[in-house]
Length: 111
Image 1 (cartoon, rainbow, N blue to C red):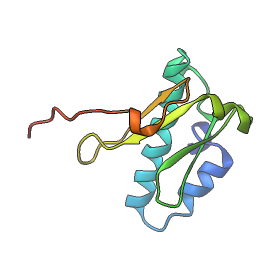
Image 2 (image 1 turned 90 degrees about the horizontal axis):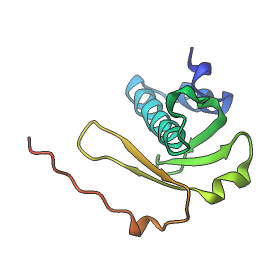
Image 3 (image 1 turned 180 degrees about the vertical axis):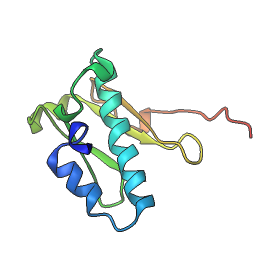
């Protein structure tokens, strides 16, 4: 079932994690980037999630690797991964080169 949403490499990345909590976190990290990209291009979840390839870097943050198997296509996009509140993951993707230092978000959660 995961192959509907993830490329083979992404599926292997999730499957190779040692515990269920890590797998679940990786699933949502990859998913939010894919969903953010599809929304940015205006197709939403009607688009193909497997057209976007994402990985986790050495500090377990998602990175956009390829768009429709084209690694050069990601150069035109900026991606920012954030945790707006505990147990939530978000991703912001824009079709422009924006340094991460220029992307800000605020937390209005009061709990």
